[in-house]
Each structure stands twice: as C-alpha cells, then as structure tokens.
Image (cartoon, rainbow, N blue to C red; front, side, top):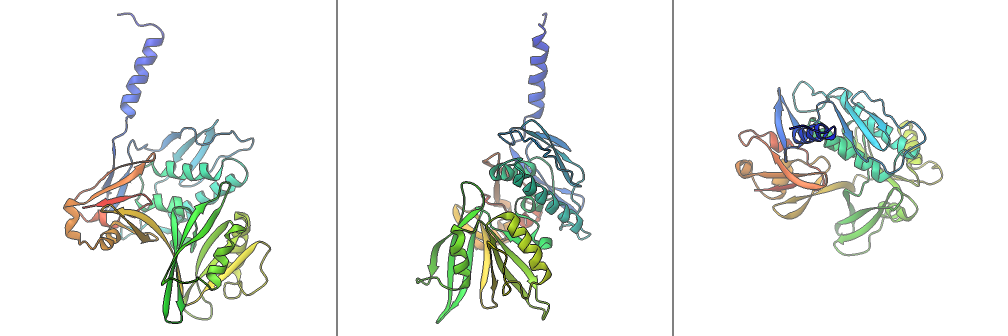
Length: 351
C-alpha cells in the first residue's frame, strides 16, 4: 500500500492520541514514605493547557516559579514542573519551602489577572488544570486553589466555600450560615442563608458581611496577639484585591490595633472575639448527602461526618472531578493513606 503525504501524519496523530489517552481514574500511591496523587494522563514535567484564556494579552504573562513555571503560546498555557514539592521528615506534610513556592505561584497568577492576562474565571480554571496535570502530593491541589493557610495565616473567600459564624446571644449561641456567590466581574458577594435559632443576625461580623454589596474581596487572618499567647482571627474586607493585599500587609505590622485605627478607604476590619467563631467550610458528598467539612478536611473527617469507622475502608469509594466530571480515585484498601487525603469541593465519598 502506498501512503499519501497526509496519511503518515494521520497515522502518527492516531498513534500519539492512543498513547496519550488518559486512564479514567486518579491513583493514590506511595512515593517512598509519602503519598502522591497521580491524575489521569499525568504529565511527567511538561504539558500544554489548551484554550487557557480567550483573549491574547499584549504584555508578558509568563510565570517564573521554583515549583511550576508558565509560558504562553497564543491562548495556550505551557506548564512545566520544575521541582516536585517535598515532604518533611515525617513523610506526610509538604515542607515550608514548597508551601512558600505555592503561595508565590498563586500571587503571581493574581498579579497577572490584575494586569489583564486572563479573567478571574480563567485564573481559577488555570489553577485547577495545573492540579489536574501533574503527579503531586495530595494537599498540593488544595493549596494551589485555596492557598497554604498553614504558612500564609490567611484564607480568602471563594464561591467554593460557605461561611459559618457562631456568635453569643442572650440565651446561648447563634449559628449563622452565609453563602458565598461569585460576582459577574470579580470578587464575591456574601449572603445570609440561615440563622439557628431563628432570629435577626446582628453584631459587627454580620454588619461587615452585609457590606458585600460594596466590598468584593474577603479574607480571614489568623494571628497571635503580641500581648498574650491567644490565637485570634480577624475578618478583613476591601473593594479590590490590591486594597486587600495592602491592608493585609499593614495589618501584619500592627495586628493588635489595626482594626481600631483609621482604615484605608474601601477597607473594613473586624476582630473575631474569643466568644465567637468564623469558619469556612467546603461541601462534599458523603453517602449521597451534602456534608460541610472544615478547612483542610480529609476523608477521615468525611467518615466522622457520616458516623463511620475506619473499618469501612475496604468498601470505601472516592471520586474527584477531572475536567469537570467526577471519576474514580483508586487507592490501596490495605493501607490507611486514603484517610489523610485532603478533600476538594465536589469530591464524593461512599461506603
């Protein structure tokens, strides 16, 4: 048989496509003493993220990061894994330098978004695509999307979260649930969903959240008072992310008195008192029911929410979104590594 000039190319393309056809599951496996999560069709160190943005930018949108670098070819992003995040000696926590690298990557993406390299939605999509591209320590996907709060000491509100506020009332405590919605352009809006026991929600925390018609970016700051060993939280909000970042920098210089001092225009601040609590939670599906887990919640936490014990591991099934669709996450049922898997919004756990 004689092939035309086009036929060899077609055969080659079919061959490459067959080779690159991804497995239809995630794989949680051991990498030495620690765990690693391998996505379907995982790239070793370099991959193209097609159609990462709709419009080309007139400025450089490349990211030079110690962990992952990004370059652009038109509207396609080329992600390169420059060094794999490391574990600390005990084997199950990503080391501090790797966490700083993640935060630097996130900061770079936010800065490029502000410069017009891509939209907020495209930035989020890019973060998700990167996490779905490389085989990395399981917490990395969480830190890339929501930040390494253990080192940054802060948590930004996103539509992936809901907010639970516990405040004192005359006969005990009230629990208020807030929904976090995306704005059409940028930022979020925080809306009160419910209060238990029923009644009007009042107080400085609610007053600040009620201003989300003007304020667009919200952040919880975790800190230790200089005058005591108390671990405290502050709710900070601003009209723009750049204002929020600048307010956060100034807060770090004087956390004890920042909220009581004159604030920059377009910035609001409330200290969460010792008798109150502000928690962000993610939604996961546990045996077909919505459960809300605390920040960094794991499969172990999902079992507790479903009132199950570790003995269910042989019957345990976990699924995670890949390219927007849920697929299976494989693991060794003879080991307990799956219990420490940090869950993402949309994950499903059944037994």
